[in-house]
Image (cartoon, rainbow, N blue to C red; front, side, top):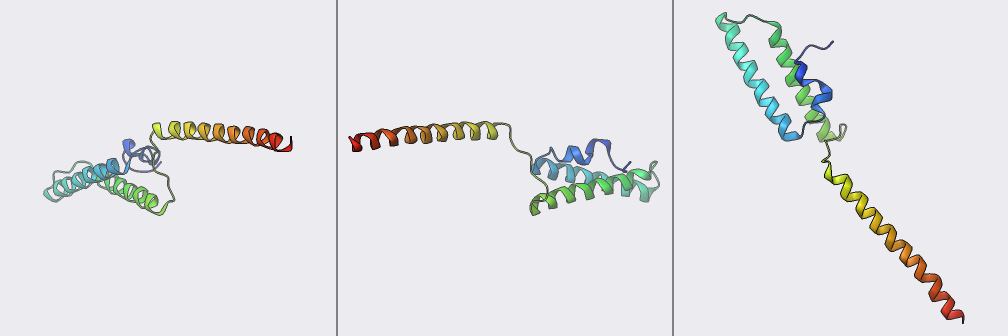
Length: 111
């Protein structure tokens, strides 16, 4: 099992949009700063949390970079595929109508 936050699993990071990832990155960096400060003053109880937060930050950076390079897909809105299917249906109807008009025009020319 990978060390890190249970709430920031790699499969869950795939569902986040870029703005959400940047927000999570800011939160993780703030938490890391606070943990380092607690460590320096001797108030830190869980030293493993430092390592987990560092790994979370690395995961977020990895997902962002993979999206920039096109390796990992960005989440798609639910409404976008519905619009595409409607557009495809309308193009099929125009193709069918054009095909239906062509034989009628040829028949009238022959007669």
